[in-house]
Length: 248
Image 1 (cartoon, one colour):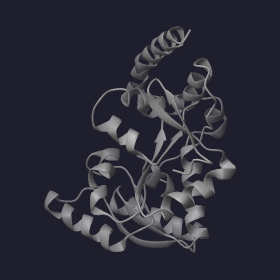
Image 2 (tube, one colour):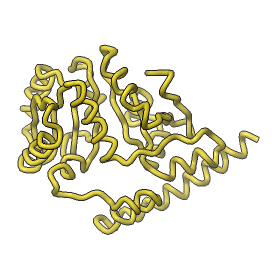
Image 3 (tube, rainbow, N blue to C red):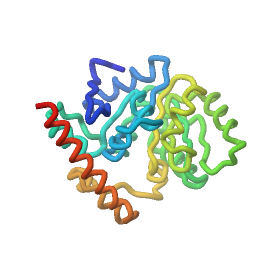
């Protein structure tokens, strides 16, 4: 970790990184240059709550090389707990910046996830936007279990500087830490809708909703059952109050 440009704080016993946008390029360079594997996590408030519990997800967060907050609720939580305020990143724009950095330094990319049609379109649009970025391989989700080892070998052989993992991969974001031991050094990022957005099959929430922390309304329209997530948010509020009172 680049200690000069990354400050890691703890919110409810969950790590969150403070990285200024102007420092992100140097942080990314330091991560892919140290000869190790690093997972980059785009952390939502629901992820933060999941990471409080012991288990595989918490271990994944604790071992991540970079943890960028994407929820306004995380920033408000830091303020309520009287912590320094991290910078909030919009997921798609954060990945765009990551790809720009990879292209600038002539690094390579591998795409894994989504359906064959979506993946093909995503690769086409990424190549058009970042013509100097070397896409060294791709593989869709939905493969036979017996073929999984072949995909691992293909990624290992391609040795990408950045592996983007999307929807449909077994285990979701936990697929990355479960298989890092099979790969050489590089950066690894999972984002469920990312490849669909690149393929223009799914759209991001409008920026004005994101700026005001209201992007959940966009997702509720697509999946109304997600409104049940209000209960974990209430629990977060109770925990935050308890932590603040305990610090007095």
